[in-house]
Length: 129
Image (cartoon, rainbow, N blue to C red):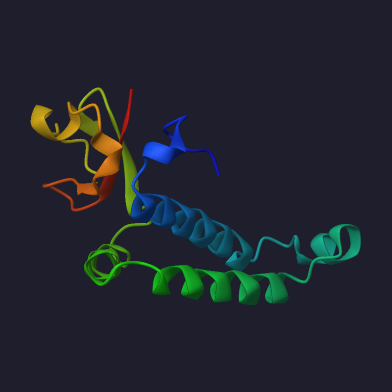
């Protein structure tokens, strides 16, 4: 997983967990698609898509258990409505809803040390400089 911040030591641990969850959920969705690739995955890559989905679901559950209760509650509220619960803020704009974010929220040098969310759409945010 690529981190938006080259120094991941400064990124909030819960944000890192949320980003990992988002990535795993995306992979799980891809495996659920019936695009005819299952025979190729089995034959050439020796991957059983059903088994891979089960393993991903198990890992997703493990990571969800590691979320703080308040973060998990917000995550569970956002997830059914949005494919991406963690979105970048680029040039002061939330890429979950394309609304400008308050300068005070995104202007702090230590922005990734606190878990922040968009006041408009509720998505967890990280700032891309």
